[in-house]
Length: 176
Image (tube, rainbow, N blue to C red):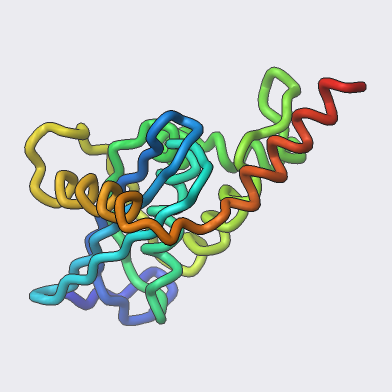
């Protein structure tokens, strides 16, 4: 039941993932949480950053989950982030890549570092993306939210260099 044969002829494990991310202050201290399940097995991931945004943490939750898988899998990934799910299910990500990482308004795509990393991590797997309503009683989504806050509250927050670089580039553009 947990193994399927992919279109590429490989036997893949079926992994179910829930993710969440958040920032206090947006920007502010932020964290992410992810839960991966495979049969009776469950793995929880979390991490925190000292100065970041909600969207960056939503992306980091997905990235951390996918990068933690040591082999190609069939992944059903749940997120309460429309930003993440819409970019993947409505082909925004493909369009951004095709247009040289610019949006339809000709402005640069925010969080390119993480979108590139997510695209690379997802390319190893057969992905199904599913939006789930946040804070609506789904136990795994609620637990991911708890992981976000645990990560922030634990201290020892990492520096989100990608966010700092993005802000620096934005500030330079304002000076020109």
